[in-house]
Length: 110
Image (spheres, rainbow, N blue to C red):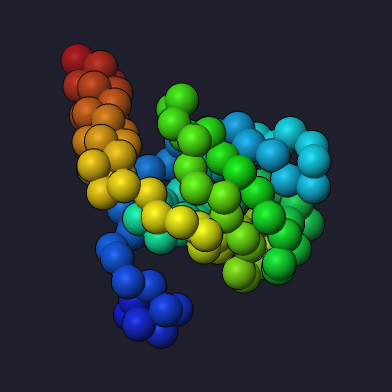
């Protein structure tokens, strides 16, 4: 998918981790599918989000910038951050996720 089609300025990095957050003044737990400096894609229960809603996420102990849901497709939603997540944090989350996956693969093949 072309980043310019969706107004993305930075590359999204795959993650696949569970994160806690708040939406509509209530706690939520969603799967973080990917992240970039400017936003992320999340997965929750069908109907968990509506376009225009604001949310905050805590990703591995790091608070993301406040986000706004910009699209919803079934269980998936695209979030645009109102600020930017620092590139070093995005890199760290990506490396941490890759290391975890490699460790799981080694144990499975072990």
